[in-house]
Length: 331
Image 1: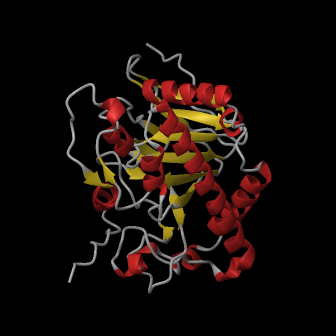
Image 2: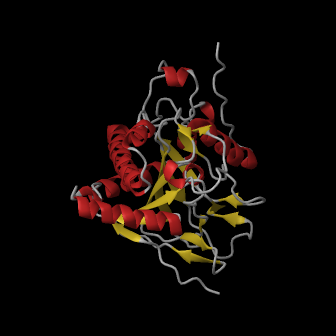
């Protein structure tokens, strides 16, 4: 039967108010949405629409560059997952090709930083297109800093919702792993496209949480298991879609699941979005949260970095274009 679901929308200003009753109410709304749907949208957060639009403008400038210019920043040239990602670089559904290209931005760490030397996943310097100048770099980094701050506020709300001790949340959020986002461009397509072509194949996110900023072109869909059907999550002006990832589900003993979602884009216009992955401290050990121990623990403890690295290896290996570097061997 057709799905009649709609994406939950939560007013995050209630949490930001600091008023105990409103904070508790917002945390409860987040708990309910995360548990029932595996995702939600937030509005009235601190990131201005002006900054979001400015970032999209810079994103469009980058993807409008000639392919040979973008390839000068190809992520194949480094071990730290930075720079340009070509069309078809990932595969989430067997036998399909994904019609999207990307550009990674993250915490800017010098090559002599210990985490870079040890080849921690996603740790390293950013790559910048010289032709777009300082404005591109400064806008990208301003957006990164603000979205990291927002993600950590959402983690605080999740901590209250799940009764996670404050010191555990603080430990998880310390020195967050790369904290990268990926600018995504979906080129124009057609309803007559090959049956094995996808914009973004059906998948669950890998990590803890993803903050997705959609542009003005729809396409995001979420799977409704009960109805056995997909339902649309149209863009809400300025809102962030917050997805729970597989590692979050593991942390909560599957009491809070991750949603299966995809992007369908069969229209003759460009589509843009920005997906920010927040996975916390790479050395943080994910093990069952005390409030989720009502059932036998399903999973052994695992370090954040180990879990994330393995999932990225899977999707890049399937497409056969990029490889994920192994960590440096201990001496």
